[in-house]
Length: 243
Image (cartoon, rainbow, N blue to C red; front, side, top):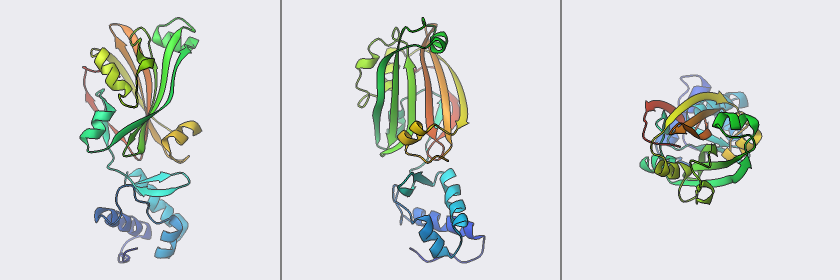
């Protein structure tokens, strides 16, 4: 550890300043594990509660990210998604200098429940395509995309290799004209989502619900879930793409 900062402000702020300075100086690189709360507690001769407050606030601010059972790590630059601009998350990450990858958790042909059928203008229990895909920036999960797709709009959806070409890129290509509806909310996700995003049970997430239409028919219903410490949403509008 480096020299302690002078005692001229509350301890939790000095802990935050100490961590941020080590990150800014390059002592702790993106992805590096920082000292544990127990180590920081001993180093600053303070309580675990004080250390936890400092680490928690830096996590909310996007400087750190917690991985359940592993520790606390230096976070990558927190990207901002313009939620009304539907675009390729792969291209967004690459433009920021990140390394994009994804993992397909689910890709299946299912029977639409009565509720989903009404939402998508389908017959109850008719075929609907369902995918759950986790998107990564430099091996850190930043989005879980839970998407239902109308087979009549994208009949070859299930045949795509989404680990090399993400769903949005494929849908952008086959249906460039669309209209969309968006709803954003904060949420504490269910356990299975936390596991896939590698976040703690206390990590809040942003959930973007999106419904798109192509030529008057519902094309997709999606829920895009972002860990709050790793992503933010903006508000620019675009009309040339579909997701």
